[in-house]
Structure formats: C-alpha cells, structure tokens
Amino acid sequence: MSTTRHLVNRRRRLASVAAVERTTAPPRSIGKQGKDARDPEAAPTPAGSGPADEAAAPEPEPPRRRRPRVTIRLPAVLCAVTVLLGGFAAWSFTAADALNGDAGRSNTALTDISRTSEVKGQITEAVDAVFSYNYAATTKSEQAARTYLTGKAVQQHREMLAQVRAQAPKQKLVLTTTVTGSGVQFLDGDRARLLIFADQSNTRTGASGETTYAAAMFAVDAVRRGGTWRISAIDTFTQ
Image (cartoon, rainbow, N blue to C red; front, side, top):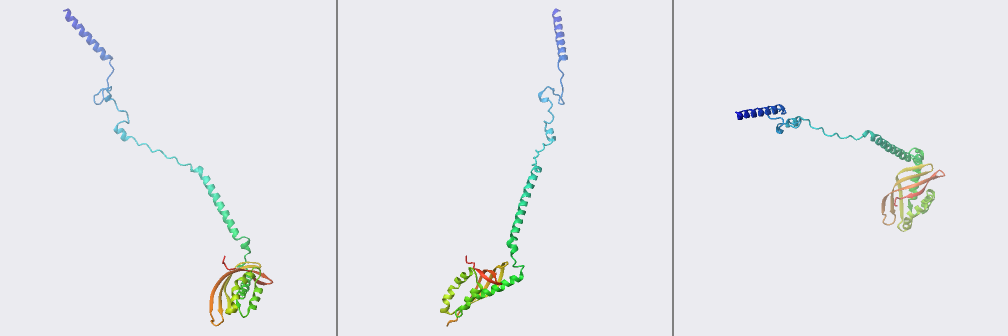
C-alpha cells in the first residue's frame, strides 16, 4: 500500500516538474516550413542576400570622371594666344614697313615715267657704243668709253675688251653689240640700276669672213652727271 502511494506521489512530482518546464521554456517560432526559428538552417535570410534580391538590386553606378577645370586654365590659354597673335601682327607690320621703307619709297622706277624712260634710252645707247669694237676704228671705241663710262666701270670695261683688242688687228675683228631689252630695277634721283639683254656678233672680216653670235645678260649701275647718264659699274653675274 505504501509502495503504491509512493509511486503515485512520484508521478505527481514528475508531472509538476514537466508542467513547470513547459511554462518556463522560451516560446518557439515556427517558420513557413515548420522548422524552429532557432534552427540555423531555418533562420531567415537577411534582406538583399538571396538570389532574387541580388537580381533585383540595382547595379552600382560607375565612378564619375572628374572634369578638368577648364574654366581656370582657359584665360591663360587665351592670353598666350593673344600674345602670339600680337607678336605675329607686330612682325608682319615691321616686315611690311621694311619693304616699304626708305629704300622702297625712294625707288621711283615705276612712278617717275619720264626719268625712267630717259635713263633707259641713254644707257641703251651707251652699252651699244662701249661694247662694240672695230679694229679699223679704234678711236671711236676709245671715245665712247670716255663719254659713257665713269668710276670703276672704266677699268672693268678695259679688262673685258682686252682680248678683243689683242686679237682684232690680226683677225680683223668687228664686234657689234645691240641691246634687245632693258629694265630699270632701281631709280633714285641721279642713281639707277638696269638689267640689260643684248645680242653680240663677232665678225672676222679677213679671208674667212666668219661671224659668230652670242647673247649677253648683265646689269649696270648708272649715275647722272651734267644731264647725261653714265655707266658707273658693270655686273656680269660671274661671282
């Protein structure tokens, strides 16, 4: 009898302990699939970590490139361009002024028509005379040299015709020069420079009667003295 009562009391104590454990145990959260919320495998996935969230999340924007501060450097560039243009303009003005300087303004070859025509006519006559030579009339050639030559042109002419004078008596040479064209390069008061084109014929009047022809081009400097233009220098462009 006492044994049975002892068993009954024991069962009552176990039942009381079980009831106390049920009332004091923490509540359990049942998920959609019936798993305990404290189960690591049943724990909810943080937002944005699932595949669907990864697909729905917007892609991060690429980093923006910083634009150079053009507004700060632009004035300096414009200033440099302005300086360059100003320098070029100054150089152009100086070059143009040099071309139209004292030498250019003093050249009246194209503006003084009467003086240009005068010097062309007289120098053409002078060239025809001093560069023609007749072995039988040497006095005429010498007189032409005294009339139309001055300054260093006297010695230049003597050297240029030295070979002709030496061979003329033996070969009976007659040298004839004819100006075919001339142009006044420079004219300033009583000074001028002309470009001369001429034809020359050299005839041996002896038994052979042979004649050779040649063309010549040279420049002469001229000065006007006593109303007459005279050759002051001869440039054959050999140097």
